Image (cartoon, rainbow, N blue to C red; front, side, top):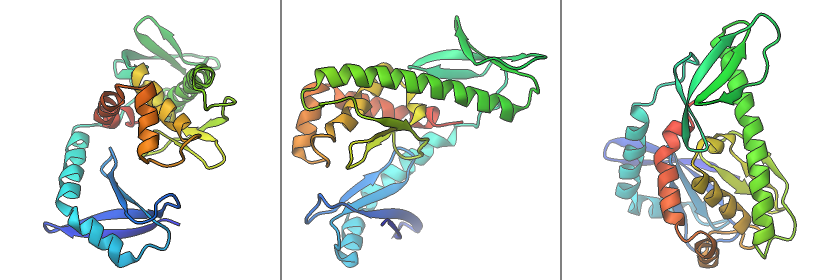
Length: 243
């Protein structure tokens, strides 16, 4: 069960979520997520006072990273879903082309450097919904192909894992204890090497369901440039998640 607490630092109140992690035994792990939210993984039944003390010790580091994340988001504007807007797919930029039709709108499609989305009403919410649908189909198909490829190459993966799509504000993916992979459909907007890093990251949890040294050694073996991919992805988060 996740609980929420507040860190006070420099006159500011910063909320953070604490989640029990059965794989941890003594120390807590503090994360400032790309969207600026703060999460803490702690051993089950870890004293609340010890968690607060650990967070307070890193208060300056937390506050600085939260401020950086907020600054990245400051210039991001919600999409208006009108012709001429730029959209991303597999790291490439395309121009949104909204086409008014009299009959039933067809599915979105890439045509040259454009993403064409048909609409009968012209309502931005209708266009947004159709663009989202296009992204989900593309994400489902692309992720499925890559998971098949990686499952053949990675020795610890016996079968292609089941996966489902879930829009998340803090994560690109996760892997349950039962081996089900969950992926954020917004990830399909990212460059291919960033997507591959996330997929291998989640597949590595089939062998090590934690973020210990053996887990990262496995990641490094199969994605030697994983730090660059993660840094690249973190730098794009405010653009990729805008909807």
